Amino acid sequence: MLRYWTAGESHGKSLIALIDGFPAGLKIDEEMINRELRLRQGGYGRGGRQKLEQDTVDILTGVWQSTTLGSPITLQVVNNDYKLERLKELERPRPGHADLTGAIKYLGSIRGVLERSSARETAVRVAAGALARQLLAVVGIETVGYVVELGAMAIGAADTRSKTIADLRELRDASSIYCVDPSRDKEAESYIDRMADEGDTLGGVIEVRVDGLPFGLGTHAQWDRKLDGRLAQAVMAVQAIKGVEIGMGFEAARRRGSEVHDPIHHDPELTHLPHLGYIRPSNNAGGLEGGMTNGQSLILRAAKKPISTLRKPLDSIRMEDKQPHRANYERSDVCAISAAAIIVEHVVAFEIATALVDKFGGDSVAELKARYDLFQTMARNR
Image (cartoon, rainbow, N blue to C red; front, side):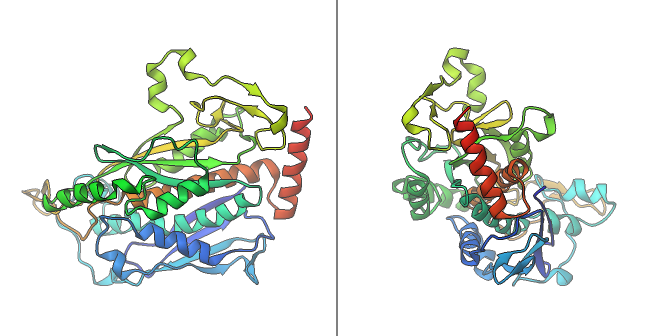
């Protein structure tokens, strides 16, 4: 079973991801991981901390000569802005954060809660997901994440189905807000600037697409192993994500069945592809049926709320005497939807890699690839 845990605080010495069950024999491209970490720090509307941190990964265990050994892998991202021991307690909890709930739950400090609940923790989730993407590439699976809504502004979501992952990635990387229509960047930047001037923040919606998926990752057989459920749990566990939908999502509830379900066709000229020649004129299911991949592209969207730390704080109370005050202000971004596109992409990639290892075995990359190829041959001949 492929899985991971993270450790570390926002202003602590470092962040750690411990990955267990990763197959042996994968040659790691460390620069690819660092490139994704840099992307996570980018995007218009980010705060001053991104100038202090220069995130890079240190691979501490589980590799030899840059090749995975099959033993636990430890990834570390060092915090340049380490100052945890010098930071003071927050007196006034911030609405929308874990401050009040966590302080009461643990009968302790707000500081102790906010340092761990901070989205800074996602740096090592991106690192783990970037490693998982390299495993997915062995069997031709590719991922990309991009922004499709910025606050109330729909942006760059049209006609993505006709584009390849490489096309979408190129467009995304050329955009200051990580959408796939860079011509909208200036309008988006002005929107973010206006929120900054008003002391407010913005959220948005991210879309992740995964191509090259075979049939049968996940299962219908048990509720906790259905891939759509596992993806939803993993994405909802990203800080500030408040909703997840797959394919048509909530819109499917408003349509007739004949307008929702994807007809099945077969083209014998395409049996060499991962979908084995089974093609659909639409992909309203978003690549998942019955908790399993159906050979089509996975399409997942996540809704991110606006950042909770406001330069013009909302009402709160002072914990010492419960008297009304404005909430504390900690250094923050105005809009981090671009970073969220990178984070959610890599969280999804890790879950897909987990499902891949579950189905085809995880002792070694060579064994996994051989079983994958055998399954494709057997399924093709079914």
